Structure formats: C-alpha cells, structure tokens
Image (cartoon, rainbow, N blue to C red; front, side, top):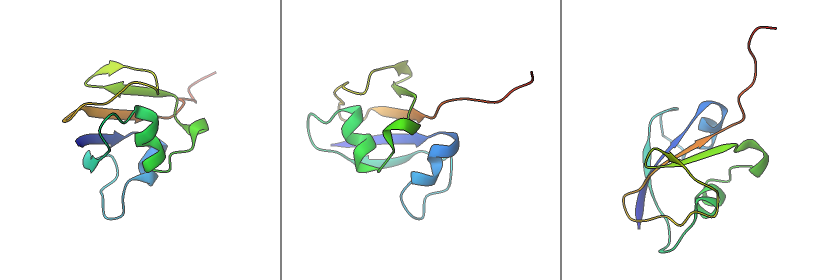
Length: 82
C-alpha cells in the first residue's frame, strides 16, 4: 500500500535518494505495516525518532497504517535560550 511521508528537521537526511529535504514523498509499505515498519524501511535510528503523526494526529510506533495515510516523523527538539 502507498503512504505519504514527511521527515522533519535532522531526519530529512534519511529521505530516499533524489528527494528534496523537507518535501513529503510517497513510499510503499506492506499491508498491515506499522509506523515502526515505515521507520525501519527508511533506516531511521530509533533514538532519533521522538514524535510520530498519522493524518495530523500523534500516534505510537505500533500504530497500523492504512492506504493513503500521511505520516510525519519528528526528531527530539532541543535548543533555545537559557
């Protein structure tokens, strides 16, 4: 099945070759795949994925995906003034 993925901030370096950083791309996953399966297919290090979204709603990594879902993977956020 086909899903749309956006990798945010430092995770954009794991986008498939030829993809423009920060631009959503489509990818195929097997029927019944989870957010974790999608992250694994993209070789996203588990310690670099902090928040995941499916169709604009935060979900856990074991969330099962459906055809046409819009996925977002976010790294931990840091920085700011002290």
